[in-house]
Length: 211
Ligand SMILES: Cc1cc2nc3c(=O)[nH]c(=O)nc-3n(C[C@H](O)[C@H](O)[C@H](O)COP(=O)(O)O)c2cc1C
Ligand code: SF4
Image (cartoon, rainbow, N blue to C red; front, side, top):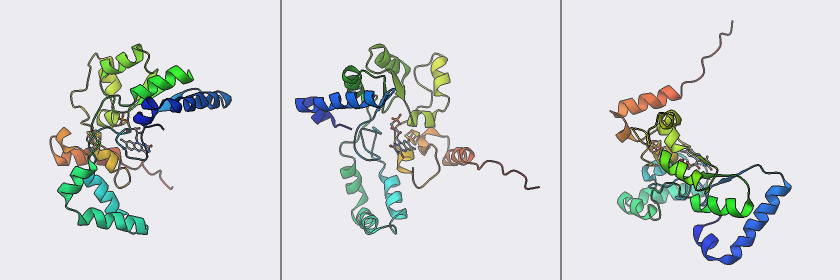
């Protein structure tokens, strides 16, 4: 994991890529999946706004687990929400293919197939990145949560889905507290419709008869 400033502005970080190359070959790595940033969530992994309300929910629901958890929950409730929301959003914004520069660099120096990650949702953008040999593949998470049929949409000739992922990061902020699903009400006719989809996706497998 390298931050953009150190990788691109400090020449002495390049030998690290040489080491990655050697290491990868010695353990027979088939490909690299390039993600940047530190920790989860972070703005280079999930480009978009900081999911303040959802992270606050996470902090509050885990406050009993440790002293650190209790402190961060106390802080998040003590500081006015509008201020904290603004502060915590510093450095967070959506950018499609945010790690493509890194992927391109790894591909060129390490020579292994590279999967780029971060904010992809648009067919021509993805094809452009692969055709320009900036990466060999891309991976997607949020765009596929919003539209699980996205690849069919692309195959049908559309550049983007009709009801796009807004990259709001609400699903990311709920990773620990809530079932998997899209939590952006603006993508649904109603909050009820949103909740129904989440519940439908998270039905337990049918229990087999005990008889
Ligand atoms: C609901 C959700 C849960 C995720 N959980 C994790 C996780 O536990 N660990 C991790 O390293 N990345 C996690 N990710 C990050 C994804 O693997 C991916 O790197 C990130 O979402 C960027 O891709 P995207 O822009 O296509 O969503 C999660 C993403 C989502 C949307
Ligand atoms: S909550 Fe929905 S719209 Fe927001 S990032 Fe997740 S999948 Fe996309």
